[in-house]
Amino acid sequence: MTKGVEAIVDPRLLVWARNSAGLDMTSAAKKAQVKAERLESWEQGEARPTIEQLRRLGKAYKRPIAVFYLPEPPADFQALRDFRRLYGVNSGSQSPQLRFEVRRAQSRRELALELYGLADGSPPEFQFRANLSDDPEHVGNNIREFLGIRYEDQVKWKPGYDAFNLWRAAIETAGIIVFQATEVEVWEMRGFSIHAPHLPAIAVNIKDSIRGRVFTMLHELTHLALSESGLCDLDEDPLRHSDEQELEVFCNHVAGAALVPREQLLREKLVATKHGQGTWTDEEIAHLADRYGSSREVLLRRLLTCGRTTEDFYREKREQLQQEYETSEMHRDAGFAPPHRLALSSAGNLFVRLVLANYHQERITASDVADFLEVRLKHLGRIESELRRSTP
Image 1: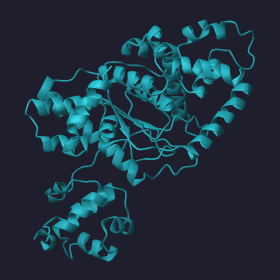
Image 2 (image 1 turned 90 degrees about the vertical axis):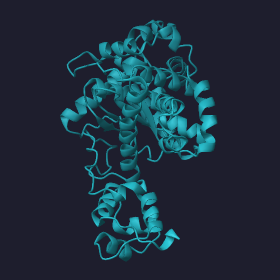
Image 3 (image 1 turned 30 degrees about the horizontal axis):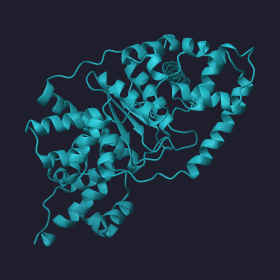
Image 4 (image 1 turned 180 degrees about the vertical axis):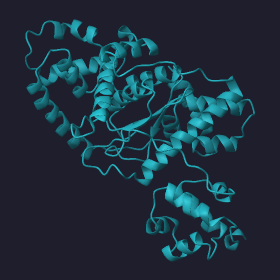
């Protein structure tokens, strides 16, 4: 039996895998169900784990067992530049869950490039560009043109998942792969982007509100247009370095302009007939937010930017909305998503289509599909059916 067979692995691989997972010795040992002293002896080369114990380490570090048999520790993916978090959170550390999500997105993107080459040749080059010196309103309109988003279509979308899926489909059609992170908390990460000339990637947090995820996609798309990779919380913190603050303000402004274009907003009957820069009722804000599929806070910020409300009213209402959001999050039930639906939602239509296309052309095996989509083989048929239904 393999249970007692020693795994002949380089101790350096054990150290690398634990460190890259962001785990200290005690936490790693607990996850792998061994004593910390034993794990330390393995890392120092004084003893060796069994194959079964190595499997548990792989599960704890979210690594396939094959990586432990590499000749030497690989060079890890470079950390994302412009790392940002909510004010008050230690900016020098990343949770194991966040490290995993970044690694998963980067490895999936690399895999997508390989699959794209096998099935369809070279992916298109990402050529949408912007500069911090550009007018954010103009960049927002350019994003809508780049994605083929028309006002007449947008206002017909149902706010929520319908709008999110259609924005996501438009972004992926433009050659940007969009993932949803499932393991990290919203307070630590709302989204990040990976800039590259081909198949750049965006990841949003599946635990965030659905309207918040739409805004995050557009925020991260702006980072890509600026040729930046970043991990952002979307908060504008005045205590940040001025360059970082300028970048975040710009990306937020562009995302708002793309989601709620100035020209169309000012033409709305409710806005055009509003005299002066007065206050807005909750019902009016909600109505306009639903029309564009935005959050109420984004809509309120657009009214301020377009000169249709005051700074004092914006700050007062924003504080109210943030309190409502925090209260709703405390009582929000995450619910249960079937494995096939979660796999598709996490990986995204573009990635799943690439995997299935290569599978049907017999370039990869069914086992590969299960590994790539992180799902059991029995769910493959449902994934294909769900993909057909979810493609706009």
